[in-house]
Amino acid sequence: MSKNPKYHIKPISIIIVLIVIIVSTGCAVIRDKIATKKGELIGQNFEITIYDHYGNKTLVIDGNKVTVGLLENDANIDESASGYKSGVLEIIVNGSQMFQVGNTIIFAEKGLDMVEDFEVPQNIVIDKGGGFVPVDRLINNIQNKLGEKKTIIVLSQTGIPIGVYQGKDVYVKVPENLPKITRMNIDGKSLYIHRANYLILDTKLIK
Image 1: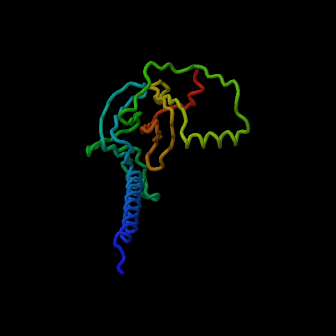
Image 2: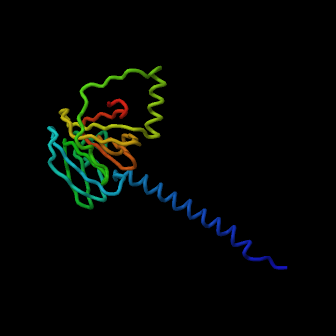
Image 3: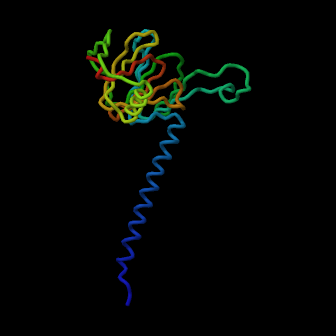
């Protein structure tokens, strides 16, 4: 008596679906790793805002594919080479190239806006809390990885306030492959800050 083919098709179909899911997920991970290695900013569309040392906005650029890295010379690549390492930042926006040195730059994913009419506090009083310092650091590190309510105050390199971002779910990371840049994920949106002073506070500290 011949077996009904449908009993063979079902397990095979499940296996095929699982393979497709694994392969597609793996490719996504690989693409993300490659993009990060190349210095591609993670996000959909970015507004790139450049500020001078006094916090004045000097240029705004929009782009949906942004790559950041150092314009390398021999000293960047070969430790035995003479000369200084390049500090020139190379930014490629939608295929167009731009070089810059020294300015403060904020790469904000579209939909991530600065808080309007926010007054930077002069004094913060912490009435209670805290305990054993290593434990506090461990807890704060875990909370950062999980995401928590944070307020980010961005200042120019001379300490002049530029703007404030807030989020209910904030994660902070310093990418190894992006020079002098801090990356933040604020409620699912990416924010990259280059050459700026900034404060990242638990929002509960600001009354």
